[in-house]
Amino acid sequence: MSLLSLQQDSNTTFHIEALKDASKQDGQKSASELIVYASTQSAEYQLAQEFIAKVYEVSHGAKLSYFMPLLFSGFNGPNTAPTATSTLTQNAFGTNASALNLSVAIGIKPVTRSPVFLEQYLNAPIDVAIAQFAGSPIARERIVEIGNLASQSAGNARLMIAFLVFYLSALSKPVGQSVATTKADWAVCTGTNAVRHILSSMGIESHVVAKATIDAITSKEQQASWGSYYDNNPLVLAIDIAKAKVVCSPHYQYTEVGDPALRLPLSYPFLYQPIVNKPVANKPTANKQFACA
Image (tube, rainbow, N blue to C red; front, side, top):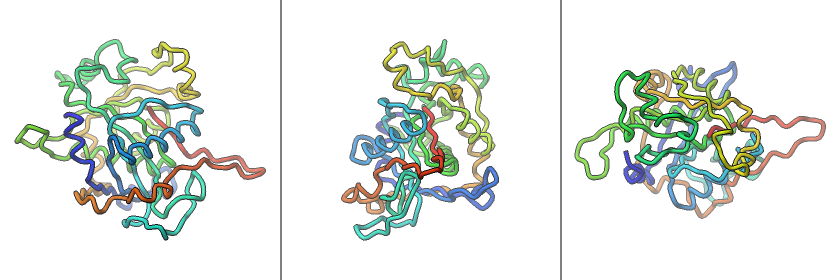
């Protein structure tokens, strides 16, 4: 899978909906659907970056500077694009948010010959590491790295993870090829305690490849930029996408609509600019956001 192949989806609108038994996790009602847009180098990409950076700052005091080449933005709300007169409602970041709220974002990068971000934590290439518990050789081009997960809630994170499972499982024709295939066989990421809890609650099996330690980052300046992120016990994880789809299929409904007209109009970017929570007097601010590299 190449980035060029993924860019073919930049005008596609995706929808993921949790069925009844998946919309209630951890004993509480959570978000039940997301409208998802893909973006690469565009105004949408910049806005997704700003959202991710803000969540990392709120969650970990981090100053994020690395972003995946393809970012997905997930929105809660009515399945209609907002207009200049859309009703403004409060979300976890503040009051100036549209009825269609940017609630979660995530990024992906195809694994190629060049090392990917999380391989700095490993003693061997990621394909070699996966092959040890997969029982057979794994081609690097059949692996995708996931990162930049930033969410306002665990429920939205579950929906975005389910979306990626279906998205990476969907058949498509890579650029220059005539045979349709899935986009990847394995997904790899660096997951904190919170992310691993989300995967476990969804029933998705993840294989621990290695511990992600701050010592792997050689620059002291870069180490400082991660804030408290490494206090959350991040581990390098590998997920068999086909097995994850089997687990998710009974609980989620996934659709794709290749109509650019359904996308959020960029003439109103202020409608989904993230704004940091302001603490209420005598009440601690609830930190519902979390981020995973």
